[in-house]
Amino acid sequence: MSRIQDPAEHRVAAQTEKVDAAALARLETAVDRRYMAGELPRLAEAGVGAGSSVTIRFQFSEYEGRPAVTGALRGTVVLACQRCLREVALTLDEQFRVIVVEQESALAHERGGYEPILAEAHRLDLHWLAEEETLLALPLVPAHEMGACPELGESPAQQEEPGEPDETPSTQRPFANLRDILQKR
Image 1: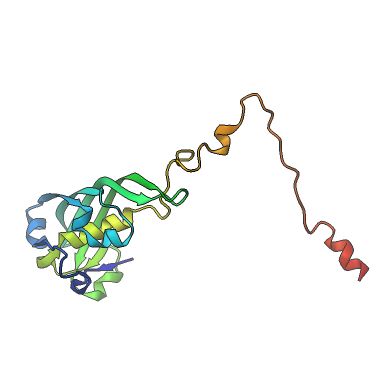
Image 2: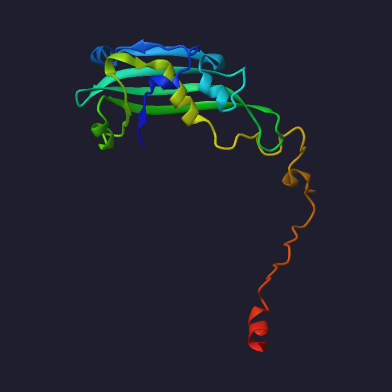
């Protein structure tokens, strides 16, 4: 899957931080940034709450003559638990590897484990890249740990008495007599 940095995607109020990825790659520079949820507007659209923040290290290098970024994303995001619908703070700890390509035709080629992104190397927007990587790191179904939802109380496994024997429920077979019914017709 490839991604395209689309300048029209940014709202007027959204911040941008354009860097020269080609120059940073030649110098093998690392750039550390901390973003609060309010600085990355697409996170709010995805349901990320106000108390969220991420720290990202962008390590620039060259791969096959193109700027590449190896990154580490760490932080805490506040989302709505899908079990109890209350806030849950989840920890993110992800790694990513992207390579900057400037022509769509180069998107299809696999490059040493790097995911291609279509962007101008001399104007790579770190805010956009931070939003992209954070969105990709979000869980599909945010939830508290099993048994930790305040509304639901303990999980069924925690409610069992230690001395109770495990009862296996009887197996139901709704079509067990289907053959008999069809033969009678």
